[in-house]
Picture 1 (cartoon, each protein chain N blue to C red):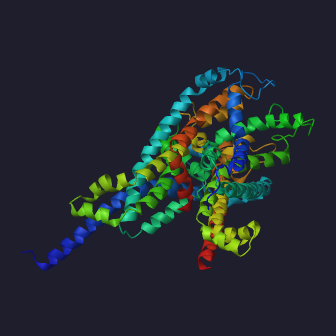
Picture 2 (cartoon, rainbow over the protein chains, first blue to last red):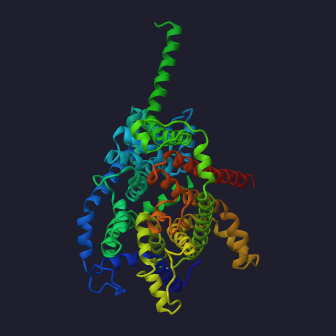
Picture 3 (cartoon, rainbow over the protein chains, first blue to last red):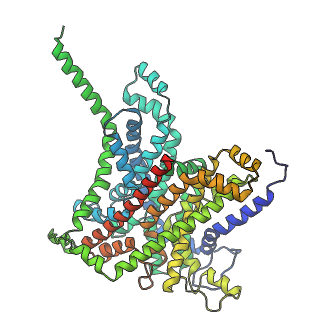
Length: 271
Length: 307
Protein backbone atom coordinates (compact mmCIF):
# COMPACT_ATOMS: atom_id res chain seq x y z
CA UNK A 1 0.00 0.00 0.00
CA UNK A 2 2.12 2.87 -1.25
CA UNK A 3 1.04 6.39 -0.58
CA UNK A 4 1.51 9.21 -2.99
CA UNK A 5 4.23 11.61 -1.91
CA UNK A 6 2.80 14.48 0.08
CA UNK A 7 0.05 12.36 1.58
CA UNK A 8 0.02 12.32 5.32
CA UNK A 9 1.17 15.88 5.92
CA UNK A 10 -2.27 16.92 7.24
CA UNK A 11 -1.85 14.20 9.87
CA UNK A 12 1.56 15.63 10.72
CA UNK A 13 -0.03 19.03 11.31
CA UNK A 14 -2.69 17.49 13.56
CA UNK A 15 0.01 15.47 15.33
CA UNK A 16 2.11 18.54 16.02
CA UNK A 17 -0.95 20.38 17.33
CA UNK A 18 -1.85 17.49 19.65
CA UNK A 19 1.71 17.23 20.89
CA UNK A 20 1.90 20.99 21.48
CA UNK A 21 -1.25 20.70 23.57
CA UNK A 22 0.15 17.75 25.55
CA UNK A 23 3.51 19.39 26.12
CA UNK A 24 2.17 22.86 26.86
CA UNK A 25 2.64 22.41 30.63
CA UNK A 26 6.30 21.58 30.04
CA UNK A 27 6.70 24.66 27.86
CA UNK A 28 4.97 26.76 30.47
CA UNK A 29 7.34 25.47 33.15
CA UNK A 30 10.37 26.47 31.05
CA UNK A 31 8.76 29.83 30.26
CA UNK A 32 8.04 30.51 33.93
CA UNK A 33 11.59 29.64 34.90
CA UNK A 34 12.89 32.43 32.64
CA UNK A 35 10.71 35.18 34.11
CA UNK A 36 11.93 37.67 36.69
CA UNK A 37 11.27 37.00 40.37
CA UNK A 38 8.10 38.06 42.14
CA UNK A 39 4.52 37.03 41.90
CA UNK A 40 3.96 39.13 38.83
CA UNK A 41 0.81 38.92 36.79
CA UNK A 42 2.53 40.44 33.78
CA UNK A 43 3.72 37.14 32.49
CA UNK A 44 4.54 36.80 28.86
CA UNK A 45 3.74 33.91 26.56
CA UNK A 46 7.26 33.88 25.30
CA UNK A 47 10.37 34.71 27.33
CA UNK A 48 11.65 37.32 24.88
CA UNK A 49 13.85 38.81 27.60
CA UNK A 50 14.96 35.67 29.43
CA UNK A 51 15.84 36.37 33.02
CA UNK A 52 18.19 33.87 34.59
CA UNK A 53 17.77 35.02 38.17
CA UNK A 54 15.46 32.06 38.81
CA UNK A 55 18.27 29.69 37.91
CA UNK A 56 20.76 31.59 40.04
CA UNK A 57 18.47 31.32 43.06
CA UNK A 58 17.66 27.68 42.27
CA UNK A 59 21.31 26.69 41.97
CA UNK A 60 22.14 28.46 45.20
CA UNK A 61 19.28 26.78 47.11
CA UNK A 62 19.06 23.44 45.35
CA UNK A 63 22.44 22.82 43.73
CA UNK A 64 23.50 20.53 46.52
CA UNK A 65 20.24 18.59 46.34
CA UNK A 66 20.75 18.04 42.61
CA UNK A 67 24.14 16.50 43.36
CA UNK A 68 22.56 14.32 46.07
CA UNK A 69 19.96 13.07 43.58
CA UNK A 70 22.70 12.28 41.09
CA UNK A 71 24.75 10.32 43.64
CA UNK A 72 21.71 8.35 44.84
CA UNK A 73 20.52 7.61 41.29
CA UNK A 74 23.93 6.41 40.12
CA UNK A 75 24.34 4.31 43.25
CA UNK A 76 20.97 2.74 42.67
CA UNK A 77 21.83 1.93 39.04
CA UNK A 78 25.01 0.13 40.15
CA UNK A 79 23.24 -1.76 42.93
CA UNK A 80 20.20 -2.70 40.83
CA UNK A 81 22.17 -3.98 37.85
CA UNK A 82 24.65 -5.74 40.11
CA UNK A 83 21.87 -7.65 41.82
CA UNK A 84 19.58 -8.11 38.84
CA UNK A 85 21.97 -9.22 36.08
CA UNK A 86 23.20 -12.42 37.75
CA UNK A 87 19.68 -13.19 38.96
CA UNK A 88 18.21 -12.80 35.49
CA UNK A 89 21.00 -14.99 34.10
CA UNK A 90 20.29 -17.73 36.64
CA UNK A 91 16.53 -17.52 36.10
CA UNK A 92 16.89 -18.06 32.37
CA UNK A 93 19.88 -20.38 32.06
CA UNK A 94 19.71 -22.74 35.03
CA UNK A 95 16.88 -25.10 35.71
CA UNK A 96 16.36 -24.28 39.35
CA UNK A 97 13.59 -25.48 41.58
CA UNK A 98 12.10 -22.47 43.30
CA UNK A 99 12.80 -20.14 40.38
CA UNK A 100 9.06 -19.78 39.82
CA UNK A 101 8.72 -18.64 43.41
CA UNK A 102 11.35 -15.94 42.85
CA UNK A 103 9.46 -14.77 39.75
CA UNK A 104 6.18 -14.73 41.63
CA UNK A 105 7.87 -12.67 44.33
CA UNK A 106 9.04 -10.19 41.72
CA UNK A 107 5.50 -9.77 40.37
CA UNK A 108 4.18 -9.20 43.90
CA UNK A 109 6.71 -6.41 44.38
CA UNK A 110 5.04 -4.47 41.59
CA UNK A 111 1.95 -4.18 43.75
CA UNK A 112 3.44 -3.32 47.12
CA UNK A 113 2.56 0.32 47.87
CA UNK A 114 5.70 2.35 48.54
CA UNK A 115 4.10 3.86 51.62
CA UNK A 116 3.78 0.40 53.21
CA UNK A 117 7.48 -0.26 52.57
CA UNK A 118 8.47 3.17 53.86
CA UNK A 119 6.33 2.75 56.96
CA UNK A 120 8.17 -0.41 58.00
CA UNK A 121 11.61 0.73 56.85
CA UNK A 122 11.47 3.91 58.93
CA UNK A 123 11.72 1.95 62.20
CA UNK A 124 14.42 -0.36 60.89
CA UNK A 125 16.42 2.55 59.45
CA UNK A 126 16.10 4.40 62.74
CA UNK A 127 17.65 1.44 64.57
CA UNK A 128 20.36 0.89 61.98
CA UNK A 129 21.29 4.55 61.61
CA UNK A 130 20.33 4.57 57.93
CA UNK A 131 18.01 7.59 58.11
CA UNK A 132 19.50 10.61 56.31
CA UNK A 133 22.15 8.53 54.57
CA UNK A 134 23.06 7.97 50.93
CA UNK A 135 23.21 4.22 51.48
CA UNK A 136 19.75 4.17 53.04
CA UNK A 137 18.22 6.03 50.10
CA UNK A 138 20.07 3.97 47.51
CA UNK A 139 18.87 0.74 49.12
CA UNK A 140 15.25 1.91 49.44
CA UNK A 141 15.11 3.49 45.97
CA UNK A 142 16.36 0.29 44.37
CA UNK A 143 13.02 -1.32 45.27
CA UNK A 144 11.89 0.08 41.92
CA UNK A 145 15.05 -0.74 39.97
CA UNK A 146 15.82 -4.31 41.06
CA UNK A 147 12.52 -6.00 40.07
CA UNK A 148 12.24 -3.94 36.88
CA UNK A 149 15.82 -4.75 35.85
CA UNK A 150 15.27 -8.48 36.47
CA UNK A 151 12.10 -8.42 34.34
CA UNK A 152 13.77 -6.53 31.46
CA UNK A 153 16.98 -8.59 31.46
CA UNK A 154 15.22 -11.90 31.87
CA UNK A 155 13.14 -11.13 28.77
CA UNK A 156 16.30 -10.42 26.81
CA UNK A 157 18.46 -13.28 28.16
CA UNK A 158 15.73 -15.79 27.42
CA UNK A 159 16.24 -15.17 23.74
CA UNK A 160 19.99 -15.94 23.80
CA UNK A 161 20.42 -19.09 21.70
CA UNK A 162 21.54 -22.04 23.81
CA UNK A 163 24.22 -22.92 21.23
CA UNK A 164 26.23 -19.79 22.00
CA UNK A 165 26.47 -20.74 25.65
CA UNK A 166 27.13 -24.40 24.81
CA UNK A 167 29.94 -23.39 22.48
CA UNK A 168 31.58 -21.26 25.16
CA UNK A 169 31.33 -24.09 27.69
CA UNK A 170 32.80 -26.57 25.24
CA UNK A 171 35.70 -24.15 24.84
CA UNK A 172 36.26 -24.55 28.56
CA UNK A 173 34.68 -21.35 29.86
CA UNK A 174 33.34 -21.58 33.39
CA UNK A 175 29.91 -20.40 34.42
CA UNK A 176 31.16 -17.01 35.54
CA UNK A 177 33.21 -16.61 32.37
CA UNK A 178 30.16 -17.41 30.22
CA UNK A 179 28.15 -14.85 32.16
CA UNK A 180 30.77 -12.14 31.86
CA UNK A 181 32.06 -12.70 28.36
CA UNK A 182 29.00 -14.03 26.55
CA UNK A 183 25.72 -13.29 28.31
CA UNK A 184 26.39 -9.71 29.44
CA UNK A 185 27.73 -8.43 26.10
CA UNK A 186 24.86 -10.06 24.19
CA UNK A 187 22.37 -8.46 26.60
CA UNK A 188 23.92 -4.98 26.38
CA UNK A 189 20.69 -3.40 25.12
CA UNK A 190 18.65 -4.76 28.00
CA UNK A 191 21.33 -3.63 30.45
CA UNK A 192 21.17 -0.09 29.06
CA UNK A 193 17.36 -0.08 29.14
CA UNK A 194 17.40 -1.27 32.75
CA UNK A 195 20.04 1.31 33.68
CA UNK A 196 18.13 4.17 32.03
CA UNK A 197 14.92 3.32 33.83
CA UNK A 198 16.55 2.63 37.18
CA UNK A 199 18.19 6.02 36.94
CA UNK A 200 14.89 7.73 36.13
CA UNK A 201 12.98 5.85 38.85
CA UNK A 202 15.50 6.81 41.50
CA UNK A 203 15.97 10.36 40.26
CA UNK A 204 12.17 10.79 40.45
CA UNK A 205 11.75 9.18 43.84
CA UNK A 206 9.81 11.34 46.23
CA UNK A 207 8.28 8.95 48.73
CA UNK A 208 11.49 7.57 50.24
CA UNK A 209 13.10 11.00 50.20
CA UNK A 210 10.08 12.33 52.08
CA UNK A 211 9.91 9.57 54.67
CA UNK A 212 13.50 8.41 55.16
CA UNK A 213 15.25 11.77 55.39
CA UNK A 214 14.56 14.27 58.12
CA UNK A 215 17.43 16.76 57.83
CA UNK A 216 19.00 18.77 55.03
CA UNK A 217 22.20 16.73 54.98
CA UNK A 218 21.01 14.23 52.37
CA UNK A 219 18.08 15.73 50.49
CA UNK A 220 17.17 14.74 46.93
CA UNK A 221 15.97 17.51 44.64
CA UNK A 222 12.40 16.13 44.46
CA UNK A 223 12.01 16.76 48.16
CA UNK A 224 13.82 20.07 47.71
CA UNK A 225 11.16 21.21 45.21
CA UNK A 226 8.34 20.05 47.48
CA UNK A 227 9.69 22.07 50.38
CA UNK A 228 10.39 24.99 48.08
CA UNK A 229 6.70 25.16 47.14
CA UNK A 230 5.70 25.05 50.78
CA UNK A 231 8.09 27.84 51.72
CA UNK A 232 8.02 30.37 48.88
CA UNK A 233 5.01 30.22 46.61
CA UNK A 234 5.88 33.69 45.36
CA UNK A 235 9.20 32.60 43.88
CA UNK A 236 7.77 30.66 41.00
CA UNK A 237 10.73 31.44 38.78
CA UNK A 238 13.13 29.70 41.17
CA UNK A 239 10.72 26.82 41.78
CA UNK A 240 10.17 26.20 38.07
CA UNK A 241 13.89 26.65 37.38
CA UNK A 242 14.58 23.82 39.82
CA UNK A 243 11.83 21.77 38.17
CA UNK A 244 13.44 22.36 34.76
CA UNK A 245 16.82 21.23 36.06
CA UNK A 246 15.19 18.18 37.66
CA UNK A 247 13.69 17.36 34.24
CA UNK A 248 17.02 17.38 32.43
CA UNK A 249 17.74 13.63 32.89
CA UNK A 250 14.33 12.69 31.45
CA UNK A 251 14.81 14.98 28.46
CA UNK A 252 18.36 13.76 27.87
CA UNK A 253 17.29 10.11 28.03
CA UNK A 254 14.48 10.78 25.60
CA UNK A 255 16.89 12.26 23.07
CA UNK A 256 20.01 10.13 23.61
CA UNK A 257 18.53 6.77 24.57
CA UNK A 258 15.18 7.01 22.82
CA UNK A 259 15.24 3.44 21.56
CA UNK A 260 15.89 2.05 25.02
CA UNK A 261 13.18 4.20 26.52
CA UNK A 262 10.59 2.88 24.08
CA UNK A 263 11.79 -0.68 24.71
CA UNK A 264 11.50 -0.25 28.44
CA UNK A 265 8.01 1.20 28.24
CA UNK A 266 6.68 -1.79 26.33
CA UNK A 267 8.82 -4.67 27.68
CA UNK A 268 8.36 -3.66 31.28
CA UNK A 269 4.61 -3.90 31.00
CA UNK A 270 4.53 -7.04 28.88
CA UNK A 271 6.63 -8.96 31.45
CA UNK B 1 40.22 -47.27 41.99
CA UNK B 2 37.54 -45.68 44.16
CA UNK B 3 34.83 -47.93 45.44
CA UNK B 4 31.34 -47.53 44.06
CA UNK B 5 29.61 -45.99 47.10
CA UNK B 6 32.18 -43.21 47.30
CA UNK B 7 31.71 -42.25 43.70
CA UNK B 8 27.97 -41.97 44.32
CA UNK B 9 28.55 -39.53 47.18
CA UNK B 10 31.07 -37.69 45.02
CA UNK B 11 28.49 -37.31 42.31
CA UNK B 12 25.92 -36.18 44.85
CA UNK B 13 28.35 -33.72 46.32
CA UNK B 14 29.34 -32.39 42.92
CA UNK B 15 25.69 -31.94 42.06
CA UNK B 16 25.09 -30.16 45.35
CA UNK B 17 28.01 -27.82 44.75
CA UNK B 18 26.75 -27.18 41.23
CA UNK B 19 23.30 -26.26 42.58
CA UNK B 20 24.88 -24.07 45.23
CA UNK B 21 27.00 -22.26 42.65
CA UNK B 22 23.88 -21.68 40.56
CA UNK B 23 21.93 -20.34 43.52
CA UNK B 24 24.75 -17.92 44.30
CA UNK B 25 23.65 -15.95 41.24
CA UNK B 26 20.14 -15.51 42.58
CA UNK B 27 20.95 -15.25 46.29
CA UNK B 28 21.96 -11.56 46.40
CA UNK B 29 18.84 -10.38 44.54
CA UNK B 30 16.59 -12.76 46.49
CA UNK B 31 18.06 -11.56 49.79
CA UNK B 32 17.52 -7.97 48.74
CA UNK B 33 13.90 -8.62 47.77
CA UNK B 34 13.27 -10.42 51.06
CA UNK B 35 14.78 -7.55 53.08
CA UNK B 36 13.10 -4.72 51.16
CA UNK B 37 9.75 -6.27 50.31
CA UNK B 38 9.33 -9.39 52.44
CA UNK B 39 10.40 -7.78 55.70
CA UNK B 40 8.38 -4.55 55.25
CA UNK B 41 5.21 -6.42 54.33
CA UNK B 42 5.47 -8.75 57.33
CA UNK B 43 6.58 -5.96 59.65
CA UNK B 44 3.67 -3.82 58.48
CA UNK B 45 1.26 -6.61 59.29
CA UNK B 46 2.72 -6.97 62.79
CA UNK B 47 2.79 -3.20 63.36
CA UNK B 48 -0.86 -2.93 62.40
CA UNK B 49 -1.73 -4.90 65.54
CA UNK B 50 0.56 -2.84 67.78
CA UNK B 51 0.37 0.51 69.44
CA UNK B 52 3.40 1.69 67.52
CA UNK B 53 3.94 5.43 67.93
CA UNK B 54 6.73 7.95 68.34
CA UNK B 55 7.31 6.73 71.91
CA UNK B 56 8.16 3.30 70.52
CA UNK B 57 11.34 4.83 69.14
CA UNK B 58 12.41 5.96 72.60
CA UNK B 59 11.18 3.14 74.82
CA UNK B 60 11.09 0.29 72.34
CA UNK B 61 7.67 -0.65 73.67
CA UNK B 62 4.96 -1.47 71.16
CA UNK B 63 2.18 -3.29 73.03
CA UNK B 64 -0.18 -5.46 71.03
CA UNK B 65 -3.65 -3.97 70.85
CA UNK B 66 -5.46 -6.53 68.73
CA UNK B 67 -7.73 -5.02 66.11
CA UNK B 68 -7.81 -1.56 67.67
CA UNK B 69 -5.86 0.15 64.87
CA UNK B 70 -8.19 -1.30 62.26
CA UNK B 71 -11.35 -0.47 64.16
CA UNK B 72 -10.08 3.10 64.76
CA UNK B 73 -9.28 3.79 61.12
CA UNK B 74 -12.30 1.99 59.69
CA UNK B 75 -14.75 3.73 62.02
CA UNK B 76 -13.21 7.17 61.48
CA UNK B 77 -15.34 9.64 59.54
CA UNK B 78 -12.39 10.15 57.23
CA UNK B 79 -12.28 6.55 56.05
CA UNK B 80 -15.42 6.29 53.90
CA UNK B 81 -14.54 9.63 52.37
CA UNK B 82 -10.95 8.60 51.63
CA UNK B 83 -12.17 5.29 50.22
CA UNK B 84 -14.60 7.05 47.90
CA UNK B 85 -11.92 9.56 46.86
CA UNK B 86 -9.49 6.71 46.18
CA UNK B 87 -12.12 5.02 44.04
CA UNK B 88 -13.01 8.19 42.11
CA UNK B 89 -9.36 9.13 41.67
CA UNK B 90 -8.40 5.66 40.43
CA UNK B 91 -11.43 5.13 38.19
CA UNK B 92 -11.31 8.65 36.76
CA UNK B 93 -7.58 8.47 36.10
CA UNK B 94 -7.58 5.00 34.59
CA UNK B 95 -10.58 5.63 32.34
CA UNK B 96 -9.28 9.03 31.23
CA UNK B 97 -5.76 7.77 30.55
CA UNK B 98 -7.09 4.80 28.66
CA UNK B 99 -9.57 6.71 26.48
CA UNK B 100 -7.08 9.41 25.52
CA UNK B 101 -4.20 6.94 25.28
CA UNK B 102 -6.22 4.81 22.87
CA UNK B 103 -7.14 7.87 20.81
CA UNK B 104 -3.46 8.82 20.54
CA UNK B 105 -2.45 5.23 19.72
CA UNK B 106 -5.04 5.01 16.93
CA UNK B 107 -3.93 8.38 15.61
CA UNK B 108 -0.25 7.41 15.54
CA UNK B 109 -1.10 4.17 13.79
CA UNK B 110 -1.52 6.18 10.61
CA UNK B 111 1.67 6.56 8.74
CA UNK B 112 2.71 10.17 8.31
CA UNK B 113 5.92 12.17 8.20
CA UNK B 114 7.52 12.74 11.64
CA UNK B 115 5.00 10.32 13.19
CA UNK B 116 7.67 8.28 14.98
CA UNK B 117 9.40 11.37 16.34
CA UNK B 118 6.16 12.89 17.63
CA UNK B 119 5.17 9.57 19.20
CA UNK B 120 8.40 9.33 21.17
CA UNK B 121 8.26 12.99 22.26
CA UNK B 122 4.85 12.20 23.69
CA UNK B 123 6.61 10.02 26.30
CA UNK B 124 8.06 13.09 28.02
CA UNK B 125 5.27 13.66 30.58
CA UNK B 126 5.64 10.05 31.68
CA UNK B 127 9.40 10.34 32.18
CA UNK B 128 9.35 13.54 34.21
CA UNK B 129 9.58 13.18 37.98
CA UNK B 130 6.03 13.26 39.37
CA UNK B 131 7.04 16.09 41.69
CA UNK B 132 8.00 18.16 38.65
CA UNK B 133 4.71 17.43 36.88
CA UNK B 134 2.79 18.18 40.05
CA UNK B 135 4.66 21.46 40.56
CA UNK B 136 4.08 22.54 36.98
CA UNK B 137 0.38 21.84 37.16
CA UNK B 138 0.08 23.55 40.49
CA UNK B 139 1.53 26.63 38.86
CA UNK B 140 -0.79 26.29 35.84
CA UNK B 141 -3.89 25.80 37.98
CA UNK B 142 -3.12 28.38 40.64
CA UNK B 143 -6.48 30.15 41.02
CA UNK B 144 -5.01 33.66 41.09
CA UNK B 145 -1.85 33.57 39.04
CA UNK B 146 -2.25 30.40 37.00
CA UNK B 147 -2.45 30.42 33.22
CA UNK B 148 -5.57 28.21 33.21
CA UNK B 149 -7.70 30.87 34.83
CA UNK B 150 -5.95 33.65 32.91
CA UNK B 151 -6.96 31.92 29.69
CA UNK B 152 -10.55 31.38 30.86
CA UNK B 153 -10.80 35.05 31.85
CA UNK B 154 -9.26 36.12 28.58
CA UNK B 155 -11.90 34.15 26.71
CA UNK B 156 -14.57 35.69 28.94
CA UNK B 157 -15.73 32.23 30.00
CA UNK B 158 -15.57 33.19 33.64
CA UNK B 159 -14.96 36.42 35.48
CA UNK B 160 -13.88 35.08 38.83
CA UNK B 161 -11.93 32.06 37.68
CA UNK B 162 -12.33 28.38 38.59
CA UNK B 163 -11.08 27.43 42.09
CA UNK B 164 -9.03 24.55 40.64
CA UNK B 165 -7.11 23.82 43.80
CA UNK B 166 -9.24 25.50 46.44
CA UNK B 167 -12.74 24.21 45.66
CA UNK B 168 -13.57 20.93 47.35
CA UNK B 169 -15.02 19.25 44.25
CA UNK B 170 -12.78 21.04 41.72
CA UNK B 171 -9.60 19.94 43.52
CA UNK B 172 -10.38 16.26 43.03
CA UNK B 173 -11.10 16.87 39.35
CA UNK B 174 -7.80 18.75 39.11
CA UNK B 175 -5.66 15.95 40.57
CA UNK B 176 -7.44 13.45 38.31
CA UNK B 177 -6.69 15.65 35.28
CA UNK B 178 -3.03 15.89 36.26
CA UNK B 179 -2.79 12.14 36.75
CA UNK B 180 -4.47 11.52 33.39
CA UNK B 181 -1.89 13.78 31.76
CA UNK B 182 0.90 11.80 33.41
CA UNK B 183 -0.58 8.44 32.36
CA UNK B 184 -1.50 9.10 28.72
CA UNK B 185 1.99 8.39 27.31
CA UNK B 186 2.24 4.98 28.97
CA UNK B 187 -1.22 3.97 27.75
CA UNK B 188 -0.38 5.21 24.26
CA UNK B 189 2.90 3.25 24.19
CA UNK B 190 1.34 -0.06 25.27
CA UNK B 191 -1.79 0.27 23.14
CA UNK B 192 0.25 1.36 20.12
CA UNK B 193 2.37 -1.78 20.58
CA UNK B 194 -0.82 -3.85 20.74
CA UNK B 195 -2.16 -2.24 17.56
CA UNK B 196 1.09 -2.97 15.71
CA UNK B 197 0.70 -6.67 16.54
CA UNK B 198 -2.63 -6.93 14.69
CA UNK B 199 -1.93 -8.43 11.24
CA UNK B 200 -2.69 -5.97 8.43
CA UNK B 201 -4.38 -8.64 6.30
CA UNK B 202 -7.24 -8.82 8.80
CA UNK B 203 -8.06 -5.18 8.09
CA UNK B 204 -7.86 -5.84 4.37
CA UNK B 205 -10.19 -8.83 4.71
CA UNK B 206 -12.64 -6.73 6.72
CA UNK B 207 -12.49 -4.05 4.04
CA UNK B 208 -13.19 -6.61 1.32
CA UNK B 209 -16.20 -7.75 3.33
CA UNK B 210 -17.43 -4.16 3.17
CA UNK B 211 -16.68 -3.16 6.74
CA UNK B 212 -16.35 0.56 7.38
CA UNK B 213 -13.77 1.95 9.76
CA UNK B 214 -16.17 1.73 12.72
CA UNK B 215 -17.10 -1.89 11.95
CA UNK B 216 -13.49 -2.91 11.46
CA UNK B 217 -12.59 -1.28 14.79
CA UNK B 218 -15.38 -3.21 16.52
CA UNK B 219 -14.76 -6.58 14.91
CA UNK B 220 -11.02 -6.56 14.28
CA UNK B 221 -9.18 -3.98 16.39
CA UNK B 222 -11.05 -4.25 19.68
CA UNK B 223 -11.11 -8.06 20.07
CA UNK B 224 -7.42 -8.38 19.18
CA UNK B 225 -6.40 -5.46 21.35
CA UNK B 226 -8.03 -6.99 24.44
CA UNK B 227 -4.81 -8.37 26.00
CA UNK B 228 -3.07 -4.98 25.77
CA UNK B 229 -6.22 -3.30 27.09
CA UNK B 230 -6.32 -5.52 30.16
CA UNK B 231 -2.61 -4.90 30.82
CA UNK B 232 -2.96 -1.10 30.78
CA UNK B 233 -6.16 -1.08 32.80
CA UNK B 234 -4.85 -3.35 35.55
CA UNK B 235 -1.39 -1.80 35.73
CA UNK B 236 -3.03 1.62 35.64
CA UNK B 237 -5.30 0.73 38.56
CA UNK B 238 -2.50 -0.89 40.59
CA UNK B 239 -0.21 2.11 40.13
CA UNK B 240 -2.90 4.77 40.57
CA UNK B 241 -4.34 3.39 43.78
CA UNK B 242 -1.03 3.99 45.55
CA UNK B 243 -0.23 7.43 44.05
CA UNK B 244 1.06 9.84 46.65
CA UNK B 245 3.41 12.30 44.93
CA UNK B 246 0.89 13.99 42.66
CA UNK B 247 -1.69 14.55 45.38
CA UNK B 248 0.79 15.76 48.00
CA UNK B 249 2.36 18.24 45.59
CA UNK B 250 -0.75 19.54 43.81
CA UNK B 251 -3.23 19.80 46.69
CA UNK B 252 -1.55 18.33 49.76
CA UNK B 253 -4.72 16.31 50.31
CA UNK B 254 -6.78 19.45 50.72
CA UNK B 255 -8.83 21.53 50.68
CA UNK B 256 -10.46 20.18 53.84
CA UNK B 257 -9.38 16.65 53.04
CA UNK B 258 -11.17 16.67 49.68
CA UNK B 259 -8.30 14.90 47.93
CA UNK B 260 -7.23 12.54 50.73
CA UNK B 261 -6.91 8.96 49.49
CA UNK B 262 -6.01 5.81 51.41
CA UNK B 263 -2.37 6.32 50.40
CA UNK B 264 -2.18 9.93 51.60
CA UNK B 265 -4.08 8.95 54.76
CA UNK B 266 -1.54 6.23 55.46
CA UNK B 267 1.25 8.77 55.01
CA UNK B 268 -0.48 11.30 57.27
CA UNK B 269 -1.07 8.75 60.01
CA UNK B 270 2.50 7.48 60.06
CA UNK B 271 4.63 10.48 59.22
CA UNK B 272 2.57 13.47 60.35
CA UNK B 273 0.78 12.05 63.39
CA UNK B 274 3.44 9.39 64.11
CA UNK B 275 0.74 6.75 64.59
CA UNK B 276 2.78 4.11 62.77
CA UNK B 277 0.47 1.29 63.83
CA UNK B 278 -2.56 2.94 62.26
CA UNK B 279 -0.57 4.00 59.23
CA UNK B 280 0.42 0.35 58.80
CA UNK B 281 -3.21 -0.75 59.12
CA UNK B 282 -4.22 1.79 56.46
CA UNK B 283 -1.49 0.67 54.07
CA UNK B 284 -2.60 -2.94 54.57
CA UNK B 285 -6.09 -1.93 53.46
CA UNK B 286 -4.38 -0.47 50.39
CA UNK B 287 -2.51 -3.74 49.79
CA UNK B 288 -5.76 -5.73 49.98
CA UNK B 289 -7.25 -3.38 47.40
CA UNK B 290 -4.26 -3.87 45.08
CA UNK B 291 -4.47 -7.64 45.48
CA UNK B 292 -8.14 -7.49 44.51
CA UNK B 293 -7.15 -5.79 41.24
CA UNK B 294 -4.49 -8.45 40.68
CA UNK B 295 -6.98 -11.27 41.18
CA UNK B 296 -9.37 -9.65 38.72
CA UNK B 297 -6.47 -9.36 36.30
CA UNK B 298 -5.42 -13.01 36.67
CA UNK B 299 -8.98 -14.23 36.20
CA UNK B 300 -9.49 -11.99 33.20
CA UNK B 301 -6.28 -13.14 31.54
CA UNK B 302 -7.11 -16.80 32.20
CA UNK B 303 -10.51 -16.30 30.61
CA UNK B 304 -8.81 -14.60 27.66
CA UNK B 305 -6.49 -17.61 27.29
CA UNK B 306 -9.36 -20.09 27.35
CA UNK B 307 -11.23 -18.30 24.59
